Length: 537
Image (cartoon, rainbow, N blue to C red; front, side, top):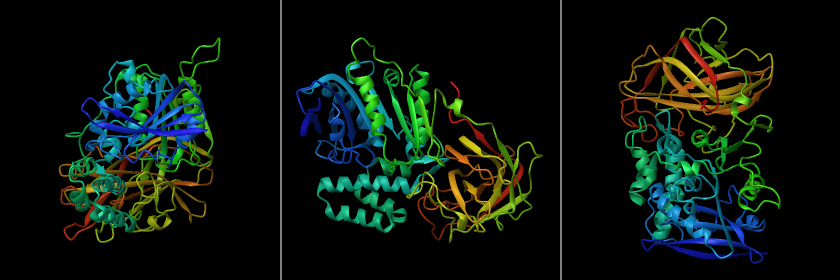
């Protein structure tokens, strides 16, 4: 039997934070699991995790707390900047809950992932969780939450900001505003009208602030600190190959290692909301290991049994190692070659092995803002993951470069980087890439990973050093007989906003002021290479 009740934390400034506590049957004492989130404590992130009663049934007190200004908690919601002091106070409070054994762990993904790391406790052991399991988050608001390659996450960023704005409407009793936001999201109009909705319903919100800031550089963007003492705690980091926060998770793994910590890392073939059955059994074992008393005569373990677990997107097979480098395949790379028809014929452009003399040729792409190239799937799409894109590759504003049929199965683990000289006839432009596997008959083109890069005034002229673009990290097996294909376009709507070409910050779909942009791809010296998943310490 599991019981639930609400409990209130009174903060030093007089604000009350309300949490729901699930109790195992009996008197305890039990270790405590804490999740802090902005979506209403009753939901408890059950979109990805088992219900808190399941964890309570395995001998934990589970607290799901409404953060300041959300749910039933007092105050004004200000986003991440409010969480460090409130998080430290919550951990101290949780240690003294009735039935607690004084040990506290934390869990949660996305916003709930970062709330575990935003903690002003410093070296105060009582304010820091004894172990933590952040999932799908990162410390850099620009690179891990709002943008990549200098371009905002448009559909994702707007959708999330509007969800937070709708909760603000609900708390204020503004039913009309809530319905207006909900209708725009349901009908798909939000990608064009979302900024106006945010200006009306959440003008001071974190999401609107991000979308108004220039993501091309770090100026005015926040990188949150994480106390070394916290990063040194037992930690299980969780990511997904099709999740936009994956690079944030990998950054956290490297930061924790740099402090001398031994973080675990699990990356599945998952998107942000689809974990294909979840990770609850793994989490339960992690918390039992670090929060419950060891068996008589034994000592608590000091490191995870499997520091690294990575899932292959193609087969679903899990691979374990002490370090990602142990799973790395051979270094591979290709050059791009075309006789000039790679944008007209999807089978004309070539990816030639790096050992073969360098490729070359010129390909011209014309971006027409009336019909911008769509973005689909990947880690930034509203419907993320692998998708079929043969129809996109047949477009004349998409240039395709394919390998010969693979002689052997090819294991791909890491991050693909493209180096390419590109010249534009307008002050700004975008370069959007997709890597796919092509069936032997050429009819099926299954997209594996994507990436974007935005170049503004001062960057649009041709550069002898070439342009750089990074794709989303991946782990997959490509079968013998398949081809790999790199597809390049100048748009990926609505994953990123359509570039107007005049150097101004893109802020939606095409408008009457958007310019036709011609890109010349100079393939001489081009290279597509696979680099390690994480940097060496």
